Image (tube, rainbow, N blue to C red; front, side):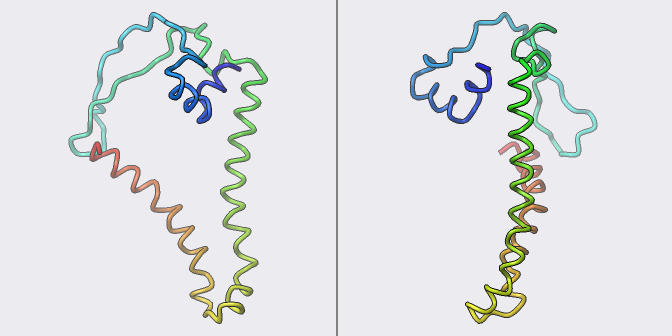
Amino acid sequence: MDILLRESSFGRLLNFASNGQIFPHRDLNIPKHEEATSSSSSCPEAPRHVLVDFSGPNDPDMPRNWPTLAKTVVMVDVMLLNFSFYAASAIFTPSIPGIEEVFDATTAEGTLGLSLFVIAYGIGPLIVRIHTCLGV
């Protein structure tokens, strides 16, 4: 359960503010791994990647070794985030006629909010991929 608190946004902020005193990391002898480049990369001049692995099959930071409660909390968190994202687009749709009426807008203007949401949902991964390829 310690890892959930330590690696959450709140835990990271607390660690930053306390110089790592609140949720200290354990000193592990983690071997350095080879740097590798992706030979089938779709990015020209892809940046070098460092392979990261767990320190062994009994590593407590490996999600397979987390307690059942920790796995359940993470699963529920991912499910709620996924649900809320798709619900956000569906919740906007019934308000379109009201938006058109209140603001004296056309149908195109009324659906602009939903359109921008869906466009950003589609373009977002493209921007992340370009950002990754450029190494910015």
